[in-house]
Image 1 (spheres, rainbow, N blue to C red):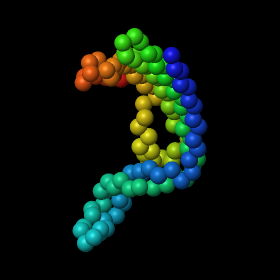
Image 2 (image 1 turned 180 degrees about the vertical axis):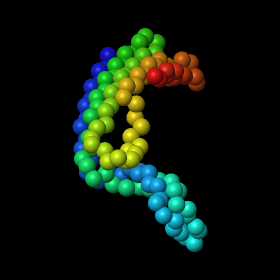
Image 3 (image 1 turned 90 degrees about the vertical axis):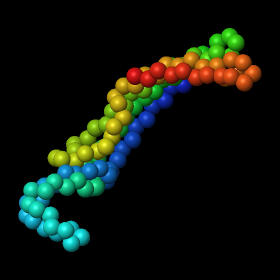
Length: 118
């Protein structure tokens, strides 16, 4: 049996995300008229420090006849005082589970791998 455990902590300054802006007055962009009240999404740097923490645990078990069973769990968080309207794009789920079984030598020329994720 193989056990793999990991942890990370990351701290970001000037994290690049998106900000939604509503124009208060009419303007032009590349020669095109932009009406007041138009909604824009632009890339911007966060003015605050953001952090991400997480850990993972994986178990791999070698079974008879070249079968391998695997399972892993990961946990991730993202936090910080975000400016109003700032979109980070951090889309990693907080909890994730994967389970699988495989056999790379089911026959001389045939193998398989099945995984289920949640």
